[in-house]
Figure: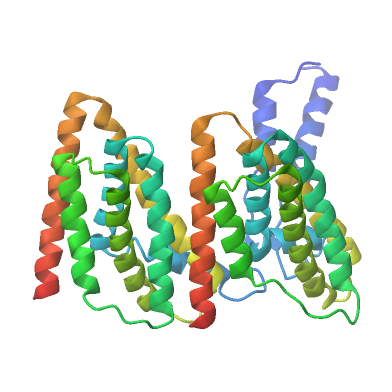
Length: 197
Length: 198
């Protein structure tokens, strides 16, 4: 007998029924991931800079489109490491605000520096962002899942930037992207003024 | 509707209900489903094991077909050997630091380190052995380790086959995505080191 697709669908729905999942015996795993994941999303100054990295990568094309998002989490993790072990870095808030200003300006002006210059710029700002997060991460959560959540959220923001940046292939898209860069830069100026206030 | 059709449909719905998941009370090793499933759950719910294992499989897939195929055998086999050794009484408590394993595996993927077939097999095998040993020690604390080791090995076989096949895809963007994931794994390892020293 040939199975009816409707019955097969019904059977699949039953099989995929979600059930209550009680937590693992290890403590802080789920909350650790949530804490880490929400941390980069909790500050607009972080969000605009990380999205700008993706936008700029999309504008620059290959290999920057993947090299910048690879560079950022690695160097940001190094900054986070410095923050976690308590190495002081002065002017972090200014650096974070400047990242919005300059990365936004790079998108706005569609600047195309050599790849190593772009990677170095992104890396310097990544240290500032990572250090700020590293200092603020709360104790008592699972370090591993918190780290994974933190990095995944950062990558997610870059992916958002790259996704939006794909409008670059159309002429009006290029214009919209440059306008978005201007907005990000203006946001950076706002945070810079706050950092100096 | 004939009786035959009605019975067939009833069987289909009954089977699907049978496979519908119940409340999953995942404990460190006790799922209530027996030691084999305890092993599967222990692996799946422990990111310090499943992330590097998936990473090692991705690396093997990234390197090529021969490496991917050998990883499907090597990774579960070395994990099993490691788990059995780790479960033995009076073994030295040598555990590879998770941050180091994550940084190594993630770094190798992100940089797409061009190891030879033998060297990449050794790397993948060493990861399986080291992590299996840690897992064996952890599960042995709860009384048994052989059947949980068999369960986790089966899970690793499936995960390795899927991850290695995905990474071995010929599309350029998949290779890039795998390398980006590698950088995330390495970054997580570096942050974890910060947590350890915190």
